Structure formats: C-alpha cells, structure tokens
Length: 484
Image 1 (cartoon, one colour):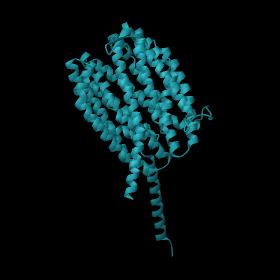
Image 2 (image 1 turned 30 degrees about the horizontal axis):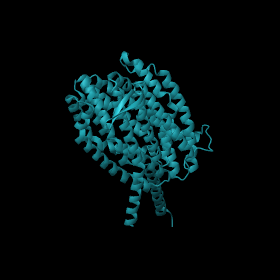
Image 3 (image 1 turned 90 degrees about the vertical axis):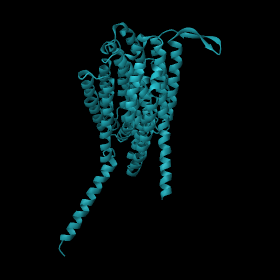
Image 4 (image 1 turned 180 degrees about the vertical axis):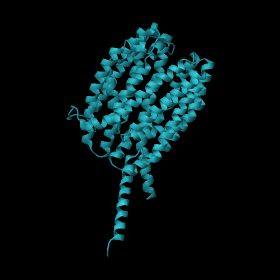
C-alpha cells in the first residue's frame, strides 16, 4: 500500500513538472527579451528609453485585462477535462474564439483611438509625447493576434499542453530580437572574427522597436490560432461560435473578479510608481532597475501557479477530493522550496545584478538593499501564489480579488503615502510597505487554506457528512423514544 502511494506521488510530481517547466521557460525567455529590448533601445538615448517606458503601465493594464478573460476559460476547460466532458471543452474553445475576435476588435479600436492621448494622461514630457504616441500606435495595431496569443495560449494550458505556447513564445521572442536588430539601427558594419560584415538596417529607432514587436505578435497569433484549430483535444471545428450563455456565464463569473483584481492592482502600481518618482532620480533609477531584476525571480512561482490551476480544475471536475488534497500537499512545499532557493539567489546576487544596469554606486547600493529585503519575503509570497492558483482552477476568483486589492491599496499605497509623502522617508520605506502587502497576502491565503475555503469539494463533502451525521443521530434518538 505504501509503495503504491509512493508511485502515485512520483507520478503526480512528474505531471506537475511537465506542466510547470514549459511555462517557466517561456516566462524566462520573455524576461530575457525584455532585458535585451531595454538594452537595445537604451543605446538610442534617454529620450528613446523614456518614450518606450512611458506607456508600459498601460501595456500591462491591457495585457492583464485580456489575461483575466483567459482565466475564465482555463477554469471551465480544466474542469471539463477532469470530468471527462471533452465536448464541453471544445464548445468552450469555440466560445473562446468568438470572445477573442470580439475583445481583440474592441481593444484595437480603443487603443488606436486613444494613442494620441495616452502619453498626455501619463504626464510624459512634452518633448517626447509625439514619439511615445507613435510607438504606442504601432505596437497596438495588431491587437487581435495579441489577444489570440494570450487567450488561446491559456486554452491550450488548460488542456494540459504547456509546451506549444512555450515553443510559439520562444519563436515570437526570437523574431522580436532579430527584427529589433534590423529595424532599430541604420545600415552598418559588424565585426565577426576580425571580419567587417555589412548589415542592412532600416534606422527606424523607437518606431522600429514597435514594428518588430508588432510583427512578432502577429506571427505568434497566427501560429497559435493554427495550432488550436488542429489540436485534437480542444479544436473548435464543428462547434457553434454564436454566444452560448451556458458556457459564457460561468466563464465570466470567474473572469470578471480576476479582471477587476488586475485592473485595481495595476492602478495601484501607477500610484506606487508616481510616489516613488517624487523621491528623486536616484530612488527612481534604483526602483526601476530593482523591479526589473526582481521580476525574473518570481518565474518559478508563477510557472507552478499555472500547473496548480490546471490540475486543481481537473480534480474539481472529477470530484476527486483526495486528489485535490494530494495536490496541495505536493504543491505547497515544492513551491516554498523553489521560492526559498530563488530568494537566496536574489539575496546573494543583488549587487551584481544591479551593477549590470547601472554604474552608479549609490543606485547599486540602494537597489541591492531593497532587493535583499524583498528576497526574504519570497517564500511567503510563493505560498500565496499557489493558493491563488488553486482558487483560479476551481473558479473562485472573488477571494483573490478582495485580498489583492485590499493589500495593494490599504497597505502598499496608504503605507507608502504616509512614509514617503508625510514622514519624508525614502525608497526603503516604500519597499517595506510592498513587503507588508506580500505578508498580508500570505496571512489571508493561509487562513483560506486552513479553513478549506480553497477546496469546494472539502466544503461540500464536509457539509454532506454533517447532514448524514445529524440524520443518523436523529434516527437513533427516534428509536430510543419509540414505543415497544
């Protein structure tokens, strides 16, 4: 019996790793390309860097809103596969296609229409507003294929296929880097092993960077649409694309709280960044670089979250309470171990990583300090990530919405305002508030885990057991008082 349990545990660990590592690699490559993009545009000067970075918060807001739509379909499709209802999964895929077309067209019209106003709203310096506006416009023209990449990638992951989105993501990143090299810079000579080779270049600068990304997004959207259409498990072929409220209603019930969560937290990031910008050039530089460095060390956590959401949805669809508990027993220690390792690496490497992006000793010292502070809190945040993944998989997104928005605005934003704007403290106090936000999330998600709120099967079966016990007790009492 013990051997059988060990075999099941090893099998489950294999499944977890098979789902998680492609997502981790995909996110790692995206982060690497972000570093490369920043470096390549940075060679054009501070104005070019500012024009690209001026609308980054809006980019995150748009992308996270679309990702929230995908979470609704992830929950529904993973549960359908767990219950063995493959036709329901294909019907949901058809609804995902229809949603992608509608959302993609709406966001195309919206982003193109406001492209001239976004830099003004973001209080970009007047000298680069026009450049930032043109960059934003070119970047968002292919909004439909970008939407397809996000939502269809989530559909494939819900079906247990994390390798295909990874492969397409790697191809998109490679195309982006190559086109950056050709479109940003003018024609020039490149030295290779003492040989001078002529290289064609369009010399488009910042607009070339936007065009490179736009082409890469378009290729990625077309490729993932083709794969989805041919995929045996979730192909939408033969399904109806007209609105099916039987599927859309539960998907939107999951997606809308997640969308509100991302919207609320993204607004919080804007407020947080603006308060840090008021602290001066050194604090802003240290924060920006530290934020970029830190993002790479959350990759293990979010890679595991995708696997947790998919497998929790499968277990919930199969109504397998034992499997749900086994998943939690494996995911939580595995995630915490990964985040301890990630945090330790960040703590030790913080000064060296800061030195890659800055040669200012003051910026490096300040950035390394805040990175080491947040490194200590990573295992606690990792626990929150996994429980949130379970809640996403079973379709309970209201609690993460409440927890994240409460933590963001009552702890991070109010705390940072008090520390930096009223008390005159610096960047370290702002990051302390951010860590306080992470620790609050840990406490709230830990309470959710201990109460079993994350697992609807445990709550349902517990209620059934209580009803059965009460009925049995009532029957026993009736026998005791019945006449002979």
